[in-house]
Length: 194
Image 1: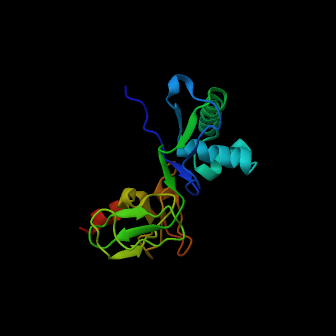
Image 2 (image 1 turned 180 degrees about the horizontal axis):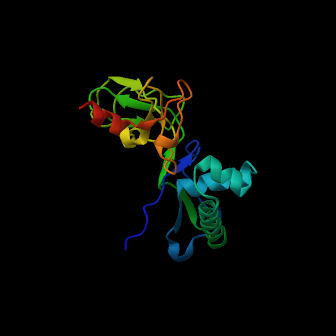
Image 3 (image 1 turned 120 degrees about the vertical axis):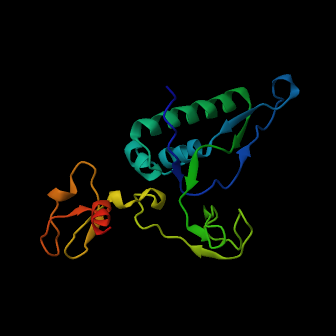
């Protein structure tokens, strides 16, 4: 059985620097050794130790569970301790993250991308190089647009009112707030019309 895929972690901004080097004596063996601090580990240290958020608050900011945040925090502290005690340089890069910034869509190739530098507006698509770029706003921030289908929507057959389907509750148990009719799945309504 393969492990569950890692969920992307939200990072507010990229770090101002890309790492640290030890000052003073030589590293063991004459070659500088490195510790790679992932961007999500940097973000946890920033939120918990610099912003003084507790683990529950920091987990909500990063859009992960509290136990996951605690594991990331423990790894980050161990890496920083290793670097300080053993005189290793710290390189901040990599990780499974996305930046909390504006999203853009290329008109030419429909590529969705974001710009980590919030003050810089992209001039061309990073995939195809086209200059036709528009701001992208998802229909519902909690559900990626690529995953929304008619089966994810409850609709009123009388007035057309729509709402997102709640997985634990059948649409037919929902009452339309506009006309008080019973709702139904949108894909069932579409099949009826055919």
